[in-house]
Image (cartoon, rainbow, N blue to C red; front, side, top):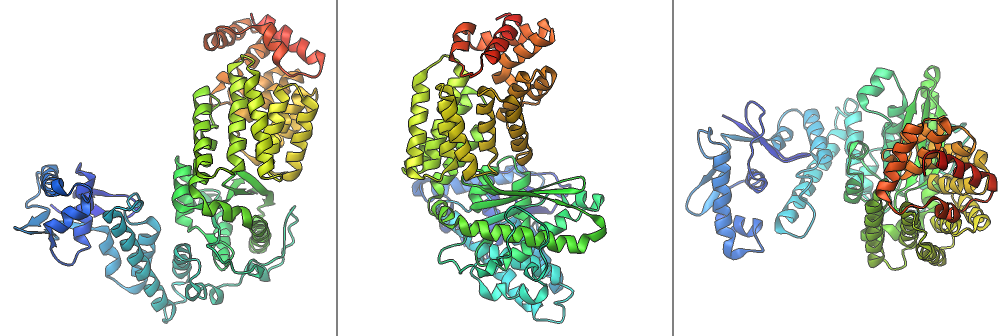
Length: 601
């Protein structure tokens, strides 16, 4: 019976039938450490490494771990860890490790394996913190990266370089992700491929720039990290014959030649796109900008997101013409690269701020994630994260604006007319503007709070200012659309919210709610219901849904929505609520009143 220890991308032990052995994680870490040791290791050293905080119990814990490992492999012909009186060693006759694949074979195979080892990461969840074992994991990763560097240089200088060009590119990207200032590594990009700066950039885009990345001065601090997210899986791209993924791959290589940014390796970008814990991966890889891409039929949609504020700073579309693939790829890459260059340069002070204060930044991101659910518990949880961000950085305007948003949302969700919530929201938005008078979010939250305070014209004015500051910021467009509904212009509102949903295709529930409200006041009740039904959690829109079903004459569905509203808010009073809602035009108030009456309120 031979067991395989996997340490890259995960940590698990499997038997010959590929069944996972249910052994303690610390036992697997012990196997990994012994595998990387050339000779037996003293028991006392292992005890200190794994249990430094409890020296009096360390030896007992080590014996217990060895016993639990033995119980996990009852069919093993011998112990997986060989022990004598004072040392422990790995039984290499019974345990193999995935790290071994990169240490033998011909050079190109070893280069591929070395790239995999660095890309997938050795024990990916164990490098954080100050414990001795975490420090050892980081040293092991550094050694694997150094091995990749040496192997890359050896192959790049050999007669096999032409055959290995793709693998050398991949290795260079990984090495520059590890150290963006490694000029010796960077030189291996230049002779191998033409750069897109040499190509014509004929595609017209709002911010397309011919400014080459290297025209920017080399940064004196660590450059901001950019992740280029592919539009689809490799298999799907091949099946569809799409050039989109190839474009992003080319662009990744080109941007790696820049000293203005640090580019996340493609394997990591794929992980970020696929993960349900995007905030965790962004935190781990310190991503400041994400180039998000999506392919729809014969169009490639591209948006550059400034992750600390979740702000779309640039967005455009490109046609994907299969008859001019080569020219198209060069033109698109030039346009995208020029935009990234200019915007990174313009946002340099903001990026540096977040790079220096990552704890505040990631607390803010966790708050933003909570607001994808429009429920009172999620809104209050988001507020706690924003306050945590302020604890880390008391002048953090985005966190002040975030708290302002949660207070306005709580006013909406509770429907109790607590004006103090809105006054606090307005004060915090103004305070955020004091910290940064070019912060679109501050103007946005000022507009939202003033809307519900009944200052409708002032609300629209503030949101217009927010949109001027950040015309591609989908959340600003959504809030502006919401105020336009209340200002009596549902047609303009619907146009604006559809534009926001175009910029942010994975539309949050709030966008759909606003689209439904605009449709309702345009007397498009079925369309309004359709938007509500697309919401992940439509409970916040139950009042509007009841109104729509009432106008459609489906009293049974209208009453079901009414009952859900009263269950969540037994004290709901229609007349009082209509007095609280900021609606500029009387016809809107009359329509809402009659529809809710028909629903049984």
